Image (cartoon, rainbow, N blue to C red; front, side, top):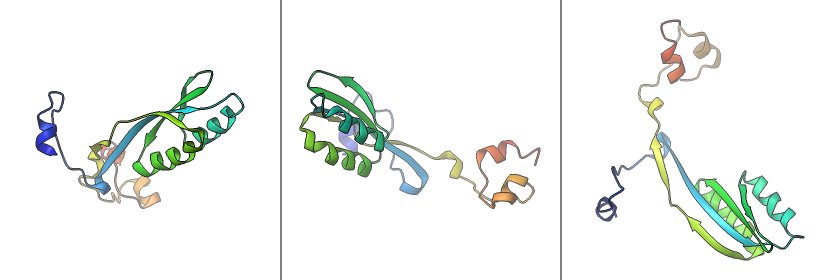
Amino acid sequence: ITKQLAKLVDVSKIQMLPADASVCRELILIKVAAKPEERAQVIAIADIFRAKIVDVGEESMMVELTGNESKLDACTKLLEKFTILELARTGITGFAITSHKNLWINDNCSICRKSRRKQTDFCTFKKIIC
């Protein structure tokens, strides 16, 4: 797969991202058949998943949703009862979390001491004040 992706002009870098040190998302657009009396149900499902209604036609609605694979699958499963007319899914994309590189608790920082959490970029930025 990596060799095939590298052949694409728009691909500039391919990197495997560990799940615990990355943020990954996927986008899906779903066009469902929805008569005017069914629209409230589609909107309710979209609200549960924090999706957006991006288009409303006379007999259909289009829902936009971003999230992880399981969230998209769950929403799609609920929308299947309305007849899915079209579906477009981007695939997973993501970035490495840069703030996970040298994590430690700064005992001199009041924020770190209070929460006993690991140091963040914010704390590093305020290190001089801490």
